[in-house]
Length: 497
Ligand code: AHR
Image 1 (cartoon, helix red, strand yellow):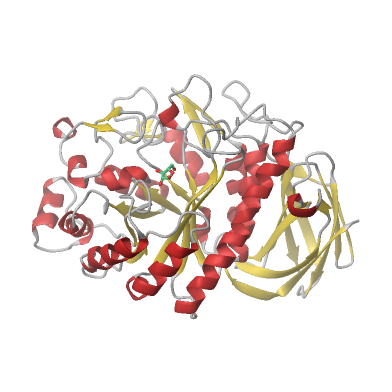
Image 2 (image 1 turned 30 degrees about the vertical axis):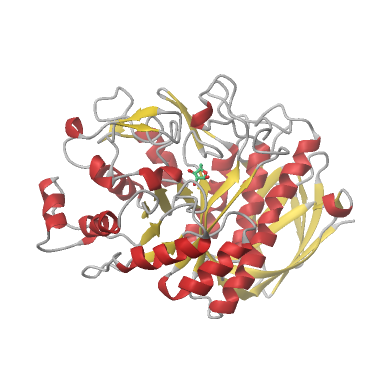
């Protein structure tokens, strides 16, 4: 069966918040240290300690927002340990992640500098699990207070007289687990208390983020919405695609058996059900959809690469991960009325990273290329789509052959992203473009594919899986015919006159 897609170019369904293409960086393994921060004295080319190659790649990808310092680390982090002269900063053991020494050389000033360099929005996650109301309140004061105050003076003494602008502030992370093992009723009360002291100073307006559920914990969502919806601007959702049977046997990132291809994509597609069901609960308390759902941790979680520290969560990244990224981003786009942000875990060298580094070497992963190709959807209008798509497999295990999303940008250009989930065969697709003003005058395409189900880039072969020009399409009136390569992610740009 030919796959048939109708795109109504004159029917916009909402704006795709650019922050759906957001990222997450934790003090975990080699994400911050080595991945982003090498220090001013490093031989690796850097600007004030931030590696130049990584910063340039992230700017190219148009990173819109970056979450920090965790993750589980956030509820162990005491921000005052990470300010002032570096030689005086407290050293501690990162008990969560590998038991290594954390020297606190990357702290508030360094993070805010990084965001300025990348021109992205900071999203700071405060400590509820082992912190105090005062500590959280003073962090916000330190960051944003303009005028005379103890924290503003401390900030000035540390070299930053002007306050920063900080919008997104998370009140705890995974407080149902590593953030304190709390029950939802208890956390809801703590959330109400802590957020009271997360103040707006001057013209700065904080968007308060409550810790939401793990995966399909609908009771957590129900309780938080019932007890605290008035006090939050957003609530989070965490869901990881773990291909294997259990957290003990997650499966390898490369060299995995063929049957794991579909199993992985099926698990990634579960995100759709999660967002739909959590949104339905949110709708009961917030029918106006004022409160955002922030999927601020998502992505694949495989076994670590052999020989690496199990606490560092370092994994390779293949075309399979690229497909997981492509279909997940489509799901977030489709729910842009509720999903205001999503942050793939994590930025560099950890889990489904967009960048891997080794000493002075850097490689862009297939997932990076998806984010780079999809940046055209950022802040664009989501277009209405109707689809009739073939299925791969049967019954409960079936997955669609194709996943699609389309948007119109502020210049009227239409971008259609298409994933072919079939690892064995190319996929024929007919796209009817309705409601175009004028007829298409130019169409161009880019595609990312691979010859093998675990195709990936290495430091030796950095461009094995890289985007190439896509030309396997033709236009017949309003009908676009395309043949998508097996296991591929393709973006088409249509300009009409
Ligand atoms: O991203 C790795 C970890 O996964 C985070 O620290 C935690 O929030 C989640 O369990």
